[in-house]
Length: 203
DNA sequence: TGAATGATTTACT
DNA sequence: GTAAATCATTCAA
Image (cartoon, rainbow, N blue to C red):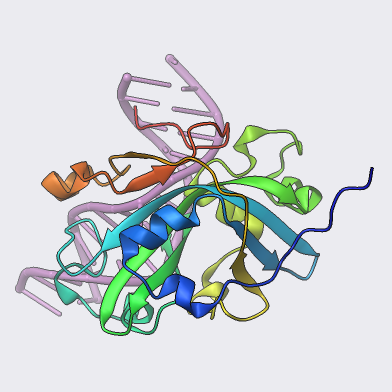
């Protein structure tokens, strides 16, 4: 039995042009595809979070803050918002909803599907390690996503989402945003409880 | 110009 | 369990 060929057709812009909570939930189970110089890398998304500026205190676009960094979130849906934190980690987000609505979905964890050798090389870990992609900074390193991906159109051919199997989704509070008080407690994190690659809850 | 800090990971006690 | 690594972005002055 040969493994069936993966369907890597990019999802249409209409998928992203919906309310951010809808898109965040819909992203769980979808495939994240990145064509790099080394080869194609594919992962199944198992954990996301919604950020709904301007009213969401935990969002970078809170209060309608429009700067060079947040600019892409104010544009049309279906683009990549990539930013750098803690002096060493990138985070990959998907701009949703539509122009003028700075809403985005943070992709927090994926399960390796294809291109394992490239992920393992970038992460300097064995291909079997769960640490390969079980966190927002980890998956960016594994996929080779950095500031060059900022603003990329996810309806292009380089970096995009593709259809995947439907899975059950659980919700919880978001992680790492305690500074945002009551907004941190909203159940805006979506994940597949059966996946071993979901990032662990905060200590 | 300068200081504070963060949508994290990793190593160490 | 706690702390260090490390720098772009932001805000105050």
